[in-house]
Image (cartoon, rainbow, N blue to C red):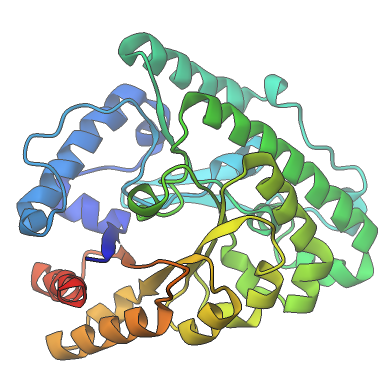
Length: 347
């Protein structure tokens, strides 16, 4: 059977499990662990027949969560303000750097960061209370962080201030390596906060979040970003790329140049057949659209999941399927249509 996975938006969790995603969820490990138990039990109550959730979940010493996607910590360390909401992931407020202020921007030393000190306090508590830490902080991609720092100004500055942008990207990468290595000292399994499926198919893999690479050309990716994904790959060995955009095929040739790339998440709407042709040896996780689940019939979902697997499978590279970001509008029956389609493919 192929591996499959579902991940819900905070709005679903807020409605069905009563979870509030204020700052307490992300900064108070006791509260987060209580919520995590409720979340896994809620999954079982809704979808336990499909191997989702746990009937009697035990506490897990979590840093972050593998049950939602929430990329914010790296940007907060670099100076961005974070807005918390009870039914949403943390929202990052751009630091608003422009080309002039970019020249003066310096990446802080992690040991001197008040944000990291708060994170380290959680780590120390979890280690003392449980003896180990499971870290599922979203491993934010290099350009994702740069956009949080500069906003859309970044896309212009690639052309008007390339040296300054490159220096910023270098600094972002080095602090990302520092953070990632600290997480790796806690656990070999660190990427669940990027994509839940990785814990089933390749738990030791370090997966970077390249959501925003959808916005740039392959030429720009190779000129500015490829060397930093290469740096991450060299730092962590087994390496993966999350690309949730709708046309991953447009940058797949650049991704093919990343050494030791072993996992790639293919955004819903992408040409997975083309991606597979370019990345024959890589495990592909095909994303199915959460918006499509709301409107497609059971027969349509089954056919479309089968097509994803058929076009994405390869003798040398594995295939899995996930649907991520389903919100409070989705019904259990619609989710079950997807789960049954995934099961049917593996039979």
